[in-house]
Length: 228
Image 1 (cartoon, helix red, strand yellow):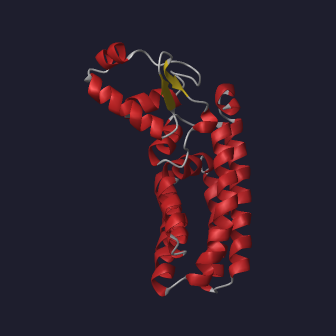
Image 2: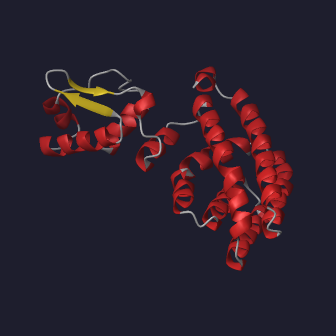
Image 3: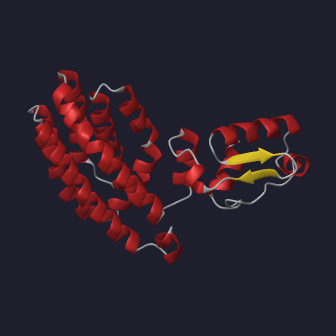
């Protein structure tokens, strides 16, 4: 399933194309026909393919893919930087995170504050991009966890591959990390103060700046990646 899923998402089997026959492809992948059929069923459940009598298994349009499926999201973000995917992710974050941050400000506990404080301190002492990105991810996931909303918490886990991709892009320039730290601190301080509207505004501002950093990073990508 994972091998087929990655090949579909990477474009080896573009939307509208028909997958090789069960016999041919199960032989190529060195799996039984039963395993191949089971993989197709799982991919169909994720919206990637559909099987019809006489026409075979066809890749569905990208708009039909379940991007909120953990496997699909991982495969999409594993394919490498893409302008369209990066911008779509930020649009999604701009819808979700400011509201989630306001909710976190209203519901935070001492344990929640400490979890965010630790992540923020790790960002402050990070000496390289890898350490910064890990701490940054921890900070944003801590905010979603603080909401106490199981759907928002799940989104934090689901988006981890995409967030890591975008964080790595937006922090290619070390100066961006220096500028971003005070913005994260403003978010944290608003949550500590239980000021929901200030927290919402601070997160919205942070995402606006991060999107500008992303656009700058995308300008340095090859044309094919920029076009996504």
